[in-house]
Image (cartoon, rainbow, N blue to C red; front, side, top):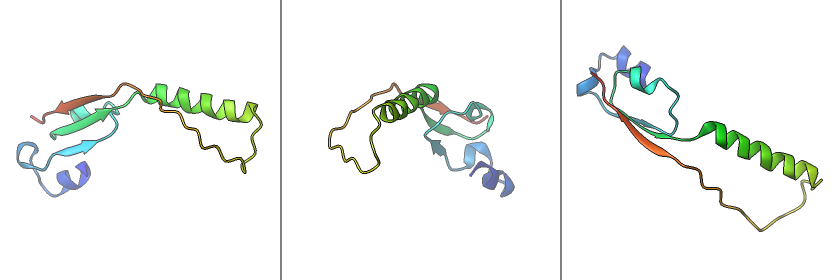
Length: 84
């Protein structure tokens, strides 16, 4: 989206805002107002690996249907970067 805005001559203060669901470290230097929901990617990866390893260790087949579920809440934050 940012490449399109730059290629079509949009200026940071007069352009549409951009929002995303990850904060990849580039948000502050893009030059456009950007609202980012920062997610703890490292923690999400650790949780995913832990869930996968538990499933492998329990030796559950792909045909097993489990109706239980777990809600894992991870801290997120809202960041707003303003273009100069």
